[in-house]
Length: 169
Image (cartoon, rainbow, N blue to C red; front, side, top):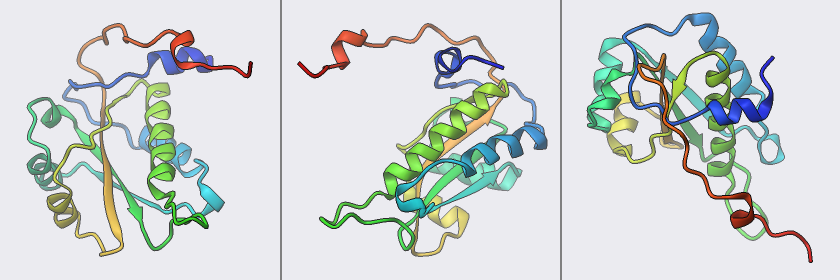
């Protein structure tokens, strides 16, 4: 079993994929990990769409027109169901936070399976909504391309712990 720190160090934003399908059993394992993600008041206000058909992939390519994006064999679109998200007493909605937690579970589980992923948030949400035929209460939040990396990752540039940590004085 992989040490957790080794796992998070291995995860990166993959932007080049091999022309190889993701095995169904690996995809199911990843999605089982997603299913177990925590959410505010356990509302689980998400829906995930796996897109690997040629037609579906082409439709998503129109939502995010980048050369590297088309190399992925599969996409997982994480959607927020606004009718299911928890809202704090002061009105703060927690759906985006919940979806983000689940998507990072997805990315880490994929890394464990030898797969690469990348968070894609800068896409045309209206086109994505149309491509997936989403209900009015569903909002596409993240598109995650998933597949086997075509190249080895470069070293991550991260701030030093002292730059991000403040301890009680």
